[in-house]
Image (spheres, rainbow, N blue to C red):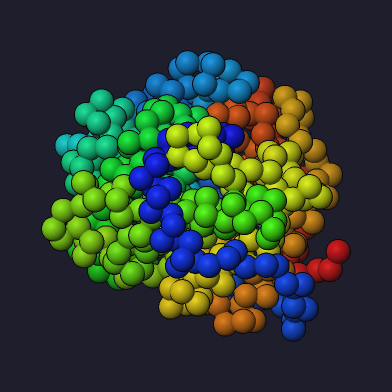
Length: 480
Ligand code: IFM
């Protein structure tokens, strides 16, 4: 995330005063409770999560249409190492190898994403049979390998033709998305029963439309409200379309849940309002409409012009699970020089960071899981992403990645602690299987359990792959 949330509006911050009243002070960390047991239940899902654009390559294959990421990455200055995803992990061709690696890693589940531009190259109209057949083979390969497939319908790769018509700022895109969901369910629903509708709508909204760090590369704070609402609406309509096409599907969505804390600690009173306001926009603006049928106060003025009669009912869908993607808390501060008066602040001085610069803090995962349990009626939850980056480098990955093992262990302790408090958490998907194309970071950021030689595509399991396999097979979390 950029240093500046320059697109948040004054309106938004003003509304944040109400959010502060609602939220009160940010919870202070208590020392973690000791675990009663380190044993996870036998039916717990152990998986990896991947995304089409980050892994598939083969951008021209089988009639695929262009996506917003093709256009964004075509400008090398948008990507840190000036790379693109033309090859990525070559998983469009090597998907069988990927499933075998997951299976060898002891896993029983695999979250991948379907590329909308492969299914509807122009984002509307008839389905591309070749694209759908490809995903039928991918799913069959997973099933044969003993992996339960979870398909994300939208992991940020909007067909470029829809972007040309306004993208997520255009309400019509929500209707197009529901059509696409219907096509997928009808063709694949006989073998693919589990769906994640959207990936991290908050990240896509803010980084894609406000800070411009991701595709479509827009920098317009006025898009915050419409894009948020249209993504929520698209999600609601797609959930309904999936269920109408095939009753009995298991349907959820993922959110990038991230506690927003005041920079400078409890004594920096002036940072509490920005932190609480940002929390409402980042977490509440997606959780509340889905699970409560309303926008939080902070978001209401932003979305008001986009909301039409019936929308909130369409968005307020019962989901079979909430997917939690968790990496780090954020620390917010007052910034009178920024149009929104809000900016990203520094984490506590002694906070450890991963190579991505993300603050390593499993307590943030516990905090968000506890929030789901207590404020949102304890839904079924899957941890649909969690992981950390190797130190940035264009060189080979670190095969002896003890830091990753320690990271995952600590986050799983937070998960287990919440399960012992009553949270209904059914699985953990590690981000990710193979080092891949990390969006604007290109290839220098490596999140995989498996390294990949970019010249040959050869995959080499890291030490964490072996560790995760032992954990997935036994369900027993070791101690450091
Ligand atoms: O690579 C991304 C993924 O696409 C979405 N969640 C965070 C991951 C790591 O940054």
